[in-house]
Image (cartoon, rainbow over all chains, first blue to last red; front, side):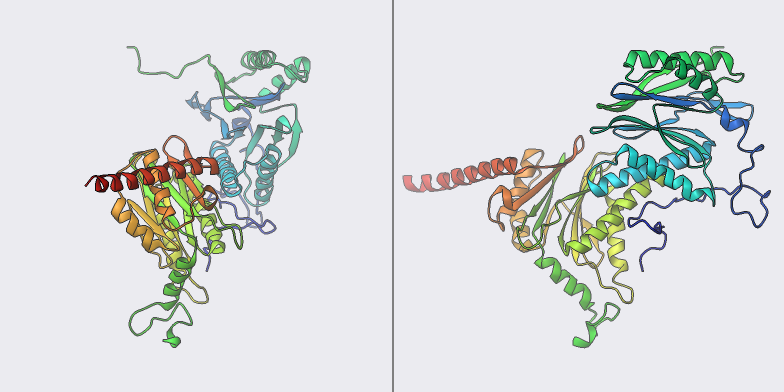
Length: 253
Length: 244
Protein backbone atom coordinates (compact mmCIF):
# COMPACT_ATOMS: atom_id res chain seq x y z
CA UNK A 1 0.00 0.00 0.00
CA UNK A 2 2.96 2.23 0.57
CA UNK A 3 3.82 4.35 -2.41
CA UNK A 4 6.02 2.28 -4.69
CA UNK A 5 7.61 5.44 -5.99
CA UNK A 6 9.99 5.45 -3.02
CA UNK A 7 12.97 3.39 -4.00
CA UNK A 8 14.37 1.78 -0.92
CA UNK A 9 17.89 0.59 -1.37
CA UNK A 10 18.03 -3.09 -0.64
CA UNK A 11 20.46 -3.48 2.22
CA UNK A 12 19.92 -0.06 3.75
CA UNK A 13 17.25 0.35 6.34
CA UNK A 14 16.34 3.93 5.54
CA UNK A 15 14.71 5.29 2.47
CA UNK A 16 16.47 7.93 0.50
CA UNK A 17 14.99 10.24 -2.05
CA UNK A 18 14.50 8.48 -5.30
CA UNK A 19 16.07 10.03 -8.32
CA UNK A 20 12.92 11.79 -9.32
CA UNK A 21 13.66 12.40 -12.97
CA UNK A 22 14.63 9.91 -15.59
CA UNK A 23 18.16 10.42 -16.68
CA UNK A 24 18.73 9.98 -20.38
CA UNK A 25 20.33 6.68 -21.23
CA UNK A 26 23.35 6.62 -23.45
CA UNK A 27 21.83 6.73 -26.92
CA UNK A 28 21.06 4.31 -29.72
CA UNK A 29 24.66 3.16 -30.09
CA UNK A 30 24.11 0.69 -27.28
CA UNK A 31 23.52 -2.88 -28.22
CA UNK A 32 20.72 -4.72 -26.54
CA UNK A 33 22.85 -6.76 -24.18
CA UNK A 34 24.72 -3.77 -22.79
CA UNK A 35 23.28 -2.54 -19.56
CA UNK A 36 25.87 0.12 -19.13
CA UNK A 37 28.71 1.24 -21.28
CA UNK A 38 31.06 4.10 -21.41
CA UNK A 39 32.04 5.26 -24.84
CA UNK A 40 35.50 6.53 -24.08
CA UNK A 41 36.38 8.51 -27.16
CA UNK A 42 33.05 10.09 -28.01
CA UNK A 43 31.48 11.05 -24.71
CA UNK A 44 34.00 10.99 -21.91
CA UNK A 45 36.67 12.84 -23.80
CA UNK A 46 37.35 16.46 -24.48
CA UNK A 47 34.25 18.14 -23.09
CA UNK A 48 34.50 16.76 -19.60
CA UNK A 49 38.23 17.11 -19.24
CA UNK A 50 38.31 20.83 -19.94
CA UNK A 51 36.66 21.41 -16.58
CA UNK A 52 39.09 21.88 -13.74
CA UNK A 53 38.32 21.25 -10.11
CA UNK A 54 41.03 21.11 -7.50
CA UNK A 55 41.33 21.43 -3.77
CA UNK A 56 43.57 21.14 -0.75
CA UNK A 57 43.48 20.90 3.02
CA UNK A 58 45.12 23.57 5.15
CA UNK A 59 45.35 24.30 8.84
CA UNK A 60 41.79 23.92 10.08
CA UNK A 61 40.21 24.58 6.69
CA UNK A 62 39.81 23.12 3.21
CA UNK A 63 39.69 24.96 -0.10
CA UNK A 64 37.98 23.87 -3.27
CA UNK A 65 38.49 25.76 -6.52
CA UNK A 66 36.71 25.16 -9.79
CA UNK A 67 36.56 26.77 -13.18
CA UNK A 68 33.29 28.52 -13.98
CA UNK A 69 32.75 28.01 -17.68
CA UNK A 70 29.79 26.10 -19.05
CA UNK A 71 30.88 24.83 -22.45
CA UNK A 72 29.04 22.99 -25.20
CA UNK A 73 31.34 21.93 -28.04
CA UNK A 74 32.77 25.23 -29.29
CA UNK A 75 30.29 27.50 -27.53
CA UNK A 76 30.79 28.95 -24.08
CA UNK A 77 27.30 29.24 -22.61
CA UNK A 78 28.40 31.22 -19.59
CA UNK A 79 31.58 31.91 -17.66
CA UNK A 80 30.11 32.26 -14.20
CA UNK A 81 28.68 28.81 -13.61
CA UNK A 82 29.17 27.87 -9.98
CA UNK A 83 30.37 24.27 -9.81
CA UNK A 84 31.17 24.16 -6.13
CA UNK A 85 27.96 23.40 -4.28
CA UNK A 86 27.52 24.20 -0.63
CA UNK A 87 26.26 20.82 0.51
CA UNK A 88 25.34 21.89 4.01
CA UNK A 89 26.61 24.27 6.63
CA UNK A 90 30.08 22.69 6.76
CA UNK A 91 30.56 20.86 3.49
CA UNK A 92 31.54 21.76 -0.04
CA UNK A 93 31.00 19.65 -3.13
CA UNK A 94 33.09 20.62 -6.14
CA UNK A 95 32.00 18.70 -9.22
CA UNK A 96 33.12 18.43 -12.83
CA UNK A 97 31.80 16.38 -15.70
CA UNK A 98 28.72 16.15 -17.91
CA UNK A 99 26.71 19.25 -17.16
CA UNK A 100 23.36 17.55 -16.71
CA UNK A 101 24.79 14.75 -14.60
CA UNK A 102 26.76 17.21 -12.51
CA UNK A 103 23.75 19.28 -11.47
CA UNK A 104 21.41 16.33 -11.17
CA UNK A 105 23.74 14.23 -9.08
CA UNK A 106 25.02 16.97 -6.76
CA UNK A 107 21.50 18.26 -6.07
CA UNK A 108 20.38 14.70 -5.36
CA UNK A 109 23.22 14.28 -2.87
CA UNK A 110 22.50 17.65 -1.31
CA UNK A 111 18.82 16.89 -0.71
CA UNK A 112 19.64 13.52 0.79
CA UNK A 113 22.20 15.08 3.10
CA UNK A 114 19.55 17.58 4.22
CA UNK A 115 17.03 14.79 4.69
CA UNK A 116 19.47 12.98 6.96
CA UNK A 117 19.88 16.13 9.02
CA UNK A 118 16.12 16.59 9.43
CA UNK A 119 15.57 12.96 10.28
CA UNK A 120 18.34 12.65 12.80
CA UNK A 121 18.68 16.13 14.20
CA UNK A 122 22.42 16.25 13.49
CA UNK A 123 24.31 16.78 10.25
CA UNK A 124 26.11 13.98 8.42
CA UNK A 125 29.83 13.72 9.08
CA UNK A 126 32.06 14.51 6.11
CA UNK A 127 33.31 10.93 5.87
CA UNK A 128 29.74 9.65 5.94
CA UNK A 129 28.67 12.07 3.23
CA UNK A 130 31.64 11.05 1.08
CA UNK A 131 30.84 7.38 1.49
CA UNK A 132 27.20 7.98 0.73
CA UNK A 133 28.14 9.86 -2.44
CA UNK A 134 30.51 7.11 -3.52
CA UNK A 135 27.84 4.53 -2.79
CA UNK A 136 25.35 6.28 -5.06
CA UNK A 137 27.91 6.45 -7.86
CA UNK A 138 28.74 2.80 -7.38
CA UNK A 139 25.10 1.76 -7.47
CA UNK A 140 24.50 3.59 -10.70
CA UNK A 141 27.77 2.48 -12.21
CA UNK A 142 26.66 -0.75 -13.79
CA UNK A 143 23.25 0.49 -14.77
CA UNK A 144 23.18 4.11 -15.77
CA UNK A 145 26.41 5.74 -14.67
CA UNK A 146 26.90 9.36 -13.71
CA UNK A 147 29.86 11.06 -15.40
CA UNK A 148 30.75 13.33 -12.50
CA UNK A 149 34.01 13.77 -10.67
CA UNK A 150 33.77 15.15 -7.18
CA UNK A 151 35.93 16.74 -4.54
CA UNK A 152 34.07 16.78 -1.24
CA UNK A 153 35.52 19.03 1.44
CA UNK A 154 34.16 19.32 4.93
CA UNK A 155 34.87 20.39 8.46
CA UNK A 156 33.95 18.27 11.48
CA UNK A 157 34.55 19.34 15.04
CA UNK A 158 36.28 16.13 16.02
CA UNK A 159 38.24 15.46 12.85
CA UNK A 160 38.96 18.92 11.51
CA UNK A 161 39.04 19.69 7.82
CA UNK A 162 39.08 16.84 5.31
CA UNK A 163 39.01 16.39 1.54
CA UNK A 164 37.71 13.42 -0.38
CA UNK A 165 38.48 12.52 -3.98
CA UNK A 166 35.56 10.71 -5.64
CA UNK A 167 35.82 9.99 -9.32
CA UNK A 168 33.19 8.96 -11.83
CA UNK A 169 33.72 5.22 -11.37
CA UNK A 170 33.18 5.56 -7.64
CA UNK A 171 36.75 5.61 -6.46
CA UNK A 172 36.99 7.13 -3.00
CA UNK A 173 40.16 8.47 -1.45
CA UNK A 174 40.72 10.72 1.51
CA UNK A 175 43.41 13.12 0.35
CA UNK A 176 45.25 16.29 1.28
CA UNK A 177 45.19 17.63 -2.25
CA UNK A 178 43.37 16.52 -5.36
CA UNK A 179 42.43 17.67 -8.83
CA UNK A 180 40.32 16.64 -11.85
CA UNK A 181 40.41 17.41 -15.55
CA UNK A 182 43.27 18.43 -17.83
CA UNK A 183 43.99 21.18 -15.35
CA UNK A 184 44.93 18.49 -12.87
CA UNK A 185 48.20 17.90 -14.75
CA UNK A 186 49.24 21.41 -13.86
CA UNK A 187 47.52 21.80 -10.52
CA UNK A 188 48.84 18.55 -9.06
CA UNK A 189 52.36 19.36 -10.17
CA UNK A 190 52.23 22.79 -8.57
CA UNK A 191 50.75 21.34 -5.40
CA UNK A 192 53.36 18.58 -5.29
CA UNK A 193 56.01 21.27 -5.41
CA UNK A 194 54.55 23.80 -2.98
CA UNK A 195 52.09 22.02 -0.73
CA UNK A 196 52.92 21.16 2.86
CA UNK A 197 50.53 20.14 5.57
CA UNK A 198 49.17 22.80 7.88
CA UNK A 199 49.32 25.64 5.38
CA UNK A 200 47.84 28.94 6.47
CA UNK A 201 44.97 30.48 4.52
CA UNK A 202 47.26 33.00 2.80
CA UNK A 203 49.71 30.30 1.74
CA UNK A 204 46.91 28.08 0.49
CA UNK A 205 45.21 30.81 -1.53
CA UNK A 206 48.61 31.72 -2.92
CA UNK A 207 49.10 28.12 -4.02
CA UNK A 208 45.64 28.05 -5.59
CA UNK A 209 46.52 31.21 -7.49
CA UNK A 210 49.75 29.63 -8.69
CA UNK A 211 47.75 26.67 -10.00
CA UNK A 212 45.27 28.95 -11.72
CA UNK A 213 48.09 30.88 -13.41
CA UNK A 214 49.61 27.61 -14.62
CA UNK A 215 46.29 26.40 -15.99
CA UNK A 216 45.57 29.71 -17.69
CA UNK A 217 48.95 29.94 -19.33
CA UNK A 218 49.57 26.31 -20.27
CA UNK A 219 46.19 24.73 -21.04
CA UNK A 220 45.19 25.26 -24.66
CA UNK A 221 41.51 26.01 -24.06
CA UNK A 222 41.91 27.27 -20.56
CA UNK A 223 38.87 28.37 -18.62
CA UNK A 224 39.16 32.09 -17.91
CA UNK A 225 37.39 32.31 -14.56
CA UNK A 226 37.57 30.37 -11.31
CA UNK A 227 35.69 30.32 -8.05
CA UNK A 228 37.33 29.49 -4.73
CA UNK A 229 35.30 28.29 -1.77
CA UNK A 230 36.42 27.55 1.74
CA UNK A 231 35.11 25.45 4.60
CA UNK A 232 36.32 25.78 8.16
CA UNK A 233 34.90 25.80 11.67
CA UNK A 234 32.78 28.83 10.76
CA UNK A 235 31.12 27.02 7.91
CA UNK A 236 31.22 26.67 4.17
CA UNK A 237 31.26 29.83 2.11
CA UNK A 238 32.52 31.47 -1.04
CA UNK A 239 35.98 32.87 -0.65
CA UNK A 240 36.80 34.60 -3.91
CA UNK A 241 36.44 34.64 -7.66
CA UNK A 242 39.37 34.87 -10.03
CA UNK A 243 38.04 36.41 -13.17
CA UNK A 244 39.89 37.29 -16.32
CA UNK A 245 36.76 37.65 -18.44
CA UNK A 246 33.54 39.13 -17.11
CA UNK A 247 30.32 37.91 -18.73
CA UNK A 248 29.34 40.38 -21.45
CA UNK A 249 26.53 42.66 -20.31
CA UNK A 250 24.57 45.05 -22.49
CA UNK A 251 26.77 46.01 -25.41
CA UNK A 252 28.26 49.46 -25.05
CA UNK A 253 27.48 50.34 -28.66
CA UNK B 1 -22.94 -1.85 14.60
CA UNK B 2 -20.31 -4.36 15.46
CA UNK B 3 -20.46 -5.74 11.95
CA UNK B 4 -19.37 -2.44 10.39
CA UNK B 5 -16.28 -1.63 12.39
CA UNK B 6 -14.11 -4.65 11.68
CA UNK B 7 -12.41 -3.08 8.71
CA UNK B 8 -11.86 0.36 7.35
CA UNK B 9 -13.30 -0.61 4.03
CA UNK B 10 -16.84 -0.98 5.33
CA UNK B 11 -19.34 1.86 5.67
CA UNK B 12 -22.00 1.53 8.33
CA UNK B 13 -25.62 1.88 7.19
CA UNK B 14 -25.79 5.38 8.60
CA UNK B 15 -22.71 6.49 6.74
CA UNK B 16 -20.00 6.18 9.38
CA UNK B 17 -16.53 4.83 8.93
CA UNK B 18 -16.10 3.41 12.36
CA UNK B 19 -12.39 2.78 12.10
CA UNK B 20 -11.82 6.46 11.41
CA UNK B 21 -13.98 7.42 14.38
CA UNK B 22 -12.08 5.02 16.59
CA UNK B 23 -8.87 6.58 15.32
CA UNK B 24 -10.23 9.94 16.44
CA UNK B 25 -10.73 8.34 19.86
CA UNK B 26 -7.07 7.43 19.89
CA UNK B 27 -6.30 11.07 19.19
CA UNK B 28 -8.50 12.14 22.06
CA UNK B 29 -6.45 9.98 24.36
CA UNK B 30 -3.15 11.38 23.14
CA UNK B 31 -1.25 14.23 24.73
CA UNK B 32 -2.63 17.75 24.51
CA UNK B 33 -1.29 19.93 21.72
CA UNK B 34 -2.04 23.52 20.83
CA UNK B 35 -1.06 25.79 17.98
CA UNK B 36 -1.44 29.57 17.81
CA UNK B 37 -0.79 31.78 14.84
CA UNK B 38 0.40 35.35 15.40
CA UNK B 39 1.21 38.04 12.92
CA UNK B 40 4.91 37.27 12.82
CA UNK B 41 5.21 34.15 14.94
CA UNK B 42 3.57 30.76 15.16
CA UNK B 43 3.75 28.74 18.34
CA UNK B 44 3.27 25.05 18.96
CA UNK B 45 2.85 23.63 22.42
CA UNK B 46 2.53 20.07 23.61
CA UNK B 47 1.96 18.50 26.96
CA UNK B 48 4.83 16.36 28.10
CA UNK B 49 3.72 13.22 29.85
CA UNK B 50 6.51 11.59 31.79
CA UNK B 51 5.03 8.09 31.60
CA UNK B 52 5.07 5.61 30.03
CA UNK B 53 7.36 6.23 27.07
CA UNK B 54 9.24 9.40 26.14
CA UNK B 55 7.12 11.39 23.75
CA UNK B 56 7.92 12.72 20.36
CA UNK B 57 8.80 16.37 20.76
CA UNK B 58 7.75 19.01 18.28
CA UNK B 59 9.67 18.24 15.10
CA UNK B 60 10.80 20.26 12.14
CA UNK B 61 9.93 19.01 8.68
CA UNK B 62 12.03 21.58 6.88
CA UNK B 63 13.85 24.76 7.84
CA UNK B 64 10.60 26.74 7.82
CA UNK B 65 7.99 24.15 8.85
CA UNK B 66 7.29 22.45 12.16
CA UNK B 67 4.81 19.81 13.26
CA UNK B 68 3.25 18.70 16.51
CA UNK B 69 0.90 15.78 16.86
CA UNK B 70 -1.49 14.06 19.20
CA UNK B 71 -2.22 10.38 19.14
CA UNK B 72 -0.21 7.30 18.32
CA UNK B 73 3.42 8.36 18.25
CA UNK B 74 4.56 5.34 16.31
CA UNK B 75 2.25 6.34 13.48
CA UNK B 76 3.59 9.86 13.79
CA UNK B 77 7.11 8.70 13.09
CA UNK B 78 6.01 7.16 9.80
CA UNK B 79 4.07 10.25 8.69
CA UNK B 80 6.85 12.61 9.70
CA UNK B 81 9.40 10.58 7.81
CA UNK B 82 7.32 10.63 4.63
CA UNK B 83 6.70 14.36 5.04
CA UNK B 84 10.40 15.06 5.44
CA UNK B 85 11.19 13.07 2.32
CA UNK B 86 8.48 14.96 0.46
CA UNK B 87 9.89 18.31 1.57
CA UNK B 88 13.30 17.44 0.11
CA UNK B 89 11.81 15.79 -2.95
CA UNK B 90 9.83 18.93 -3.68
CA UNK B 91 12.98 21.02 -3.36
CA UNK B 92 14.78 18.65 -5.70
CA UNK B 93 12.17 18.62 -8.44
CA UNK B 94 10.98 22.23 -8.46
CA UNK B 95 13.86 23.99 -6.66
CA UNK B 96 11.43 25.61 -4.28
CA UNK B 97 10.72 24.94 -0.62
CA UNK B 98 7.26 23.60 0.13
CA UNK B 99 4.49 25.86 1.30
CA UNK B 100 2.75 24.95 4.53
CA UNK B 101 -0.43 24.20 2.63
CA UNK B 102 1.35 21.85 0.23
CA UNK B 103 2.92 19.71 2.90
CA UNK B 104 -0.34 19.71 4.89
CA UNK B 105 -2.20 18.54 1.81
CA UNK B 106 0.41 15.84 1.34
CA UNK B 107 0.16 14.58 4.92
CA UNK B 108 -3.63 14.73 4.84
CA UNK B 109 -3.64 12.89 1.54
CA UNK B 110 -1.47 10.20 3.06
CA UNK B 111 -3.81 9.87 6.01
CA UNK B 112 -6.77 9.61 3.64
CA UNK B 113 -5.12 6.88 1.57
CA UNK B 114 -5.10 4.64 4.58
CA UNK B 115 -8.84 5.10 5.05
CA UNK B 116 -9.64 3.68 1.66
CA UNK B 117 -7.56 0.55 1.37
CA UNK B 118 -7.77 -3.07 2.37
CA UNK B 119 -5.79 -4.60 5.17
CA UNK B 120 -4.60 -1.33 6.70
CA UNK B 121 -5.83 0.88 9.48
CA UNK B 122 -5.90 4.66 9.55
CA UNK B 123 -3.12 6.66 11.19
CA UNK B 124 -4.19 7.33 14.75
CA UNK B 125 -3.05 10.89 15.02
CA UNK B 126 -3.96 14.49 14.30
CA UNK B 127 -1.23 16.90 13.39
CA UNK B 128 -0.76 20.62 13.83
CA UNK B 129 1.49 21.99 11.12
CA UNK B 130 2.94 25.49 11.28
CA UNK B 131 5.29 27.47 9.18
CA UNK B 132 5.89 30.45 6.98
CA UNK B 133 5.24 30.73 3.29
CA UNK B 134 8.77 30.85 1.84
CA UNK B 135 8.02 33.78 -0.46
CA UNK B 136 5.23 35.87 1.04
CA UNK B 137 6.39 35.31 4.62
CA UNK B 138 2.79 34.83 5.76
CA UNK B 139 2.53 32.55 8.82
CA UNK B 140 0.18 29.60 8.68
CA UNK B 141 -1.29 26.97 10.97
CA UNK B 142 -3.03 23.86 9.67
CA UNK B 143 -4.58 20.84 11.32
CA UNK B 144 -5.07 17.36 9.87
CA UNK B 145 -6.93 14.42 11.36
CA UNK B 146 -7.16 10.64 10.79
CA UNK B 147 -9.92 11.01 8.22
CA UNK B 148 -7.58 12.98 6.02
CA UNK B 149 -9.32 16.33 6.21
CA UNK B 150 -7.32 19.46 6.83
CA UNK B 151 -8.07 23.09 7.40
CA UNK B 152 -6.32 26.31 8.24
CA UNK B 153 -6.71 27.88 11.66
CA UNK B 154 -5.82 30.99 13.62
CA UNK B 155 -5.49 28.77 16.67
CA UNK B 156 -6.49 25.24 17.50
CA UNK B 157 -5.96 22.42 19.93
CA UNK B 158 -6.02 18.67 19.67
CA UNK B 159 -5.48 15.64 21.87
CA UNK B 160 -6.49 15.36 25.48
CA UNK B 161 -8.95 17.99 26.76
CA UNK B 162 -8.88 19.73 23.44
CA UNK B 163 -12.44 20.93 23.99
CA UNK B 164 -11.51 22.92 27.08
CA UNK B 165 -8.50 24.35 25.30
CA UNK B 166 -10.58 25.29 22.30
CA UNK B 167 -13.16 26.98 24.53
CA UNK B 168 -10.41 28.94 26.19
CA UNK B 169 -9.03 30.00 22.82
CA UNK B 170 -12.46 31.03 21.57
CA UNK B 171 -12.83 33.28 24.58
CA UNK B 172 -9.34 34.67 24.71
CA UNK B 173 -7.89 34.66 21.21
CA UNK B 174 -6.83 37.93 19.73
CA UNK B 175 -4.27 38.88 17.10
CA UNK B 176 -0.90 38.73 18.78
CA UNK B 177 2.71 38.88 17.81
CA UNK B 178 6.03 37.78 19.21
CA UNK B 179 6.07 36.97 22.89
CA UNK B 180 2.32 37.54 23.27
CA UNK B 181 1.65 34.62 20.94
CA UNK B 182 3.89 32.39 23.05
CA UNK B 183 2.07 33.50 26.18
CA UNK B 184 -1.31 32.75 24.67
CA UNK B 185 -0.21 29.25 23.74
CA UNK B 186 1.17 28.57 27.20
CA UNK B 187 -1.94 29.96 28.89
CA UNK B 188 -4.06 27.64 26.79
CA UNK B 189 -1.97 24.63 27.71
CA UNK B 190 -1.99 25.59 31.38
CA UNK B 191 -5.77 25.19 31.36
CA UNK B 192 -5.37 21.46 31.05
CA UNK B 193 -1.84 20.70 32.18
CA UNK B 194 -0.16 21.03 35.55
CA UNK B 195 1.85 24.17 35.42
CA UNK B 196 5.59 23.97 35.22
CA UNK B 197 8.27 23.92 32.58
CA UNK B 198 8.74 20.22 32.86
CA UNK B 199 5.20 19.40 31.73
CA UNK B 200 5.08 21.62 28.71
CA UNK B 201 7.11 21.80 25.56
CA UNK B 202 6.93 24.92 23.42
CA UNK B 203 8.38 25.59 20.00
CA UNK B 204 8.36 29.00 18.38
CA UNK B 205 8.67 29.41 14.62
CA UNK B 206 9.69 32.78 13.25
CA UNK B 207 10.60 33.78 9.76
CA UNK B 208 14.19 34.69 10.65
CA UNK B 209 15.12 31.93 13.04
CA UNK B 210 12.96 29.03 11.92
CA UNK B 211 12.08 26.55 14.63
CA UNK B 212 13.32 27.22 18.14
CA UNK B 213 12.49 25.01 21.10
CA UNK B 214 12.15 26.92 24.34
CA UNK B 215 14.05 25.36 27.19
CA UNK B 216 12.58 24.66 30.61
CA UNK B 217 13.94 27.80 32.23
CA UNK B 218 12.39 30.06 29.61
CA UNK B 219 9.04 28.31 29.89
CA UNK B 220 9.14 28.55 33.67
CA UNK B 221 9.84 32.26 33.40
CA UNK B 222 6.86 32.82 31.12
CA UNK B 223 4.64 30.66 33.33
CA UNK B 224 5.66 32.79 36.29
CA UNK B 225 4.78 35.92 34.31
CA UNK B 226 1.38 34.48 33.48
CA UNK B 227 0.70 33.54 37.08
CA UNK B 228 1.68 37.04 38.18
CA UNK B 229 -0.68 38.54 35.62
CA UNK B 230 -3.44 36.25 36.78
CA UNK B 231 -2.86 37.22 40.40
CA UNK B 232 -2.86 40.90 39.49
CA UNK B 233 -6.13 40.47 37.58
CA UNK B 234 -7.66 38.69 40.57
CA UNK B 235 -6.52 41.42 42.91
CA UNK B 236 -7.91 44.12 40.60
CA UNK B 237 -11.26 42.32 40.51
CA UNK B 238 -11.40 42.07 44.29
CA UNK B 239 -10.23 45.60 45.05
CA UNK B 240 -13.17 47.65 43.61
CA UNK B 241 -15.77 45.44 45.32
CA UNK B 242 -14.01 46.11 48.64
CA UNK B 243 -14.44 49.82 48.16
CA UNK B 244 -18.18 49.56 47.79
